[in-house]
Image (cartoon, rainbow, N blue to C red; front, side, top):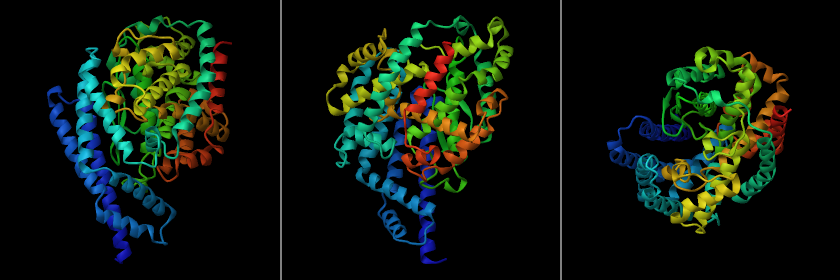
Length: 500
């Protein structure tokens, strides 16, 4: 083995170690969100802090930095290898900005904050969370401060999750969407609500879970490389190269909440399960950005799962699963009920039209917190005021207000939400490109055939991992930069047809 080959072997070994440490931390997080006994929360926070410190030490080791410099100077690397080094060097330079003690403190604090939130939310006790959230905010402002090249803390957090984007770009997208979606939602709501009484009947939990799992198997989710469990707030996580898990939650008087949660998280997992094999265990072995990742989950949840063709395929099975609850319900009624538009308080329960207004609200509050314009002690009141302004709703308590989302309590304010709406925008843009390449694509869904859509997404989005930058990936896959027009066209077309 030559010297340069030894350098590359050392690098790939280090990358695998970092991937394994990330997977181990993900395992601890997954367990904390699913099965961890409440009394074990303190010990789990300590374990996560310890592993975070070990991972940070490995990620910032001087010898690792010298290896990256040596690899970057080589001229014989393939394009994939060169991109691995580029991404690794960027990750290394970012990691070296943070002192190890700071990394461990953040990890420990966020673990403790999450555990406190799981108890404070059911008790409507935002006061309990104020000191946790104040410290989270301080830690995140401090984190952004290690990167003075970002004048605005939100620019740092946006770039962290959606590389290359700025807060000003997000502001522009959100402004364009809000201007279009508010009057569209008003029009649809004014037209009257469809029948939904049957959604309040009894649907046993285990039967719901089996039905959803049958659907995602047909989507292409590989249960040999994953599983589904229950949690407070559904999520997808990768614990290893061939271990991509999803979670959901079940309401026994709502047959579609768990279903769409399952479809959504499976959409994330399909991305991770279809990254190129030779990228796994390297810096390229995962999704490229929050927005692109969310585009996959929202596509499989909404553009597929809420389509007329989806219900043509699956309503009969659902009615057979719950004959007492759905015996007097038609396929058309289920399709319309799954697409009802209403002003609501809960983001994860929101319809396609109003969902983005929930995100825009949270994003605005984050910006105000990070800039110092809003104090944590005033956040609950600011939340209620923003919801009255953007959605015409006021939560009866903080349970459905500032306490409803886990993000700020498990990771602090900062870039946690804009990816959801960017994902909505991109989901329609990717789907339109897939349709153009596969005429009659929607007809496949009525036959429970998702192979052409999965194949297009695998070839044009999933397999690339982090090989391309987000903006490059979008242009290569769709022929144009990110645009809100395909998304607005999709929404106008869908709801225009629903209203006749």
